[in-house]
Length: 160
Image 1 (cartoon, rainbow, N blue to C red):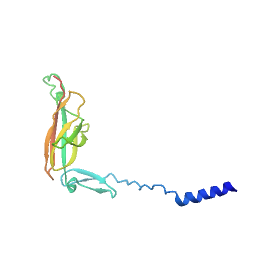
Image 2 (tube, one colour):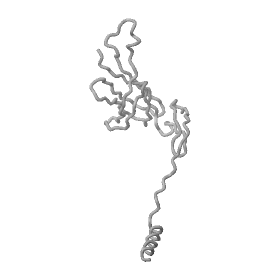
Image 3 (cartoon, rainbow, N blue to C red):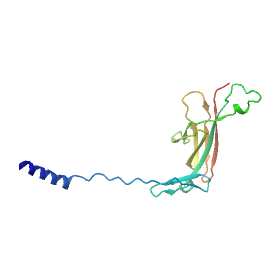
């Protein structure tokens, strides 16, 4: 009887004073639509309402670029020029403020293309490399609000 009484009291205390388990909001799944913005960038649906948000509406401007590496042949022979053209290069790129403070890190894809939306201002694009070669140039850029910027980053393969 004493065991039943203790169990009953414990049950009442549990239900009256035990905190409710945390309730997490239901995840939002957006359709994978795309929309072209006035600045020629493409965006997908985002946020809790699955809205299209163009970078220009946030005060951001698109910076797009291409990273390539060359030379790809030690000697370019007549008739083989096409085979020795620079190739697209996939690399992580640090985006720094002029004072060297890191803003973000982006990555060029397998075809060498990258894109980032930045507020107006000056930045340094610096490819992250683990070794001396390949050696990629860093680019200092100035982003002007509403004006898409195209950037070309060249990397030296070290092949001679």
